[in-house]
Image (cartoon, rainbow, N blue to C red; front, side, top):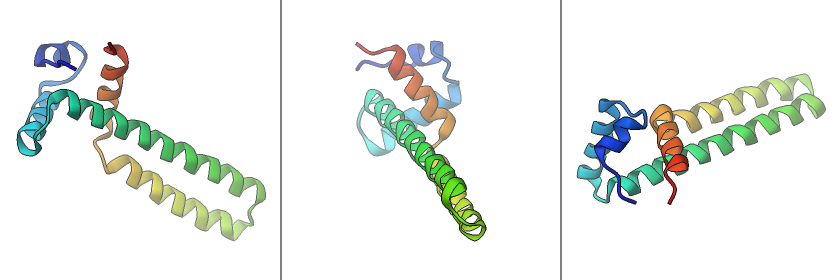
Length: 104
């Protein structure tokens, strides 16, 4: 996919976001399209992890004892924090939104 700085800026990316993407491409190779696709996929994976953790939490509330509920909640909260902060959440969301709007 052809991606230019102008289309990114028009789609809601800040100049700092575009600079981060360009520096990533320069440091690790590839293209801007590949980087956007990877970040969009990371956002989908993070959403899946959060949804799975929330499902397990609901099951803990329904079927678990108080001790299991507390320890499971702390563990699930840690898993959600890692899933969200292992990638830049706002930039990944913007990439996911850009990919969804500019499919060809």
